Image (cartoon, rainbow, N blue to C red):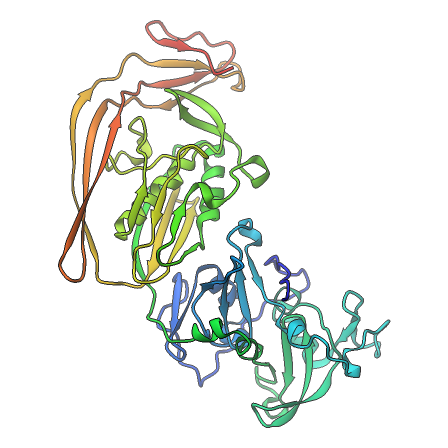
Length: 469
């Protein structure tokens, strides 16, 4: 068993990004650049989200080859996808900036080789070549140029051999090659003067032959489609709330949920200060309190709406205790979370895996979730919302906040009446059968809510409450 090393996807300071010209022999994918997914009919597979972003930015087909499988989950918990010349890994348990890695195929497939080219060197055999003491090998010439202009260390890793002649059984001829942690470079003199003078060996194809499960995953798939999406705005939010929204969205972005699996919002990871979350205001027992992760409810609500619009099974949803400004455009269509006690969960009851894509646009103060998967013909409509038992709010509430500047006052909540709401979702399947479910929410009245700092005297007639000790 090998142990893959996590690759932090970051540009090396000396690497120059150069996307080579696409081979004229390869047809363009069906999806346009910038979409969350692209389908490659040559092999019948999709490339999506975080993998697609890195794939597109670092040479695409020319560097990694065509996709050989869909993204699928291994017993280890890793989600992997094979390409002709690489294998991508996604670790859902890792932080967003460390989730994506490339398998060390070059190191794995050359393990145990004892030819002189693999012997560890103490110094460069040629002063014109760059020496890497980390791996005991040097790099130069056409291979050095290709490495440096294609995001070298991040994509290929260190050289683990010197250049040498090797027989390629697939091509039926000998090439000058050099192995790297994640790749094999081949020199093609017949392509001198073109972008294909240096080409990558098909290590992904070699490695997939070792794994029957992965080989079975090579069966062609259908094109992934957008199943549902939703957006909400946060234009009046404090910087702390925006920070938490951005961080939590990044944690959910890129998740693949296998067919039949249940997604838990609380299971996304650690919503702590160590994970980048900050104190923000949230509703706790009828008052505004600063809690770590304030703003998570906007993320859970937006994701809930996207999942509902995609027609997937909502297994656990708790509505907010009050009508919240950010989501009141559709009453009864929100989902609160307060980890770990209150969770939002849903199940992928579609015909294949589904993928969660989340974005935050700070220029428009809008966040969006999209749900991608295989379209099985289901459609979603809504009936309502139906509201009754309206209850007016009481007098405004003022709460002291010592962190505000002297004389500072901020209105956190614009009061809303209490109300009972039923919102019905109707899912129509491809065979014409329908399923109807109810989102019921009981909203209690919510008064205008202000926080005030030192030196401020609240106006008469308001409720004054103390912050939680």
